Image 1 (cartoon, one colour):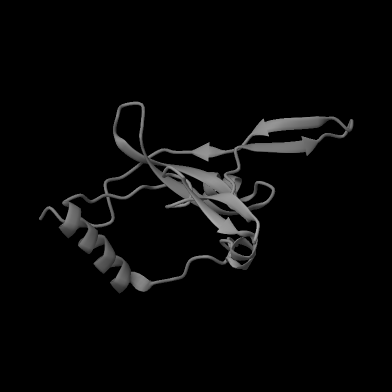
Image 2 (cartoon, rainbow, N blue to C red):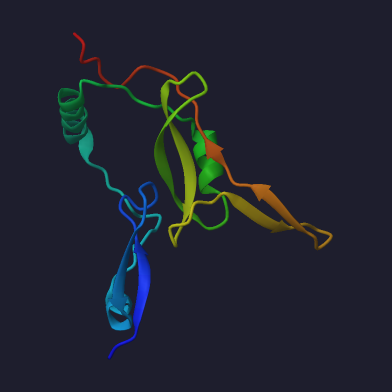
Length: 144
């Protein structure tokens, strides 16, 4: 009889509660792990982008965008091992809708801490970059 192990299966990768399931060792070994790398994503063009934004507005009667500056995006991406950014829906201090941006490593871990060795040979731990701030109302005005 094959050995049984219990693994956690995540839906929406990080945000939802894990569900436990039992699989054989061979089933686990043959499953593909998520492949996160810097090349994930593609240019979809203005026409499809505009359609997707409008479809969202039509379905949820909610529009808006979130601006994040180049400098903070570069700081997130320049963290050691960072291959991309997870974008989480959130509420800011004023209870307004916003997003939080966090760097992600190739193995899917959020980069919440960075460890460096300074010139004296000491290990220095620094907090990973977790970013937010919203400027602007949106790409399109669907209220007209």
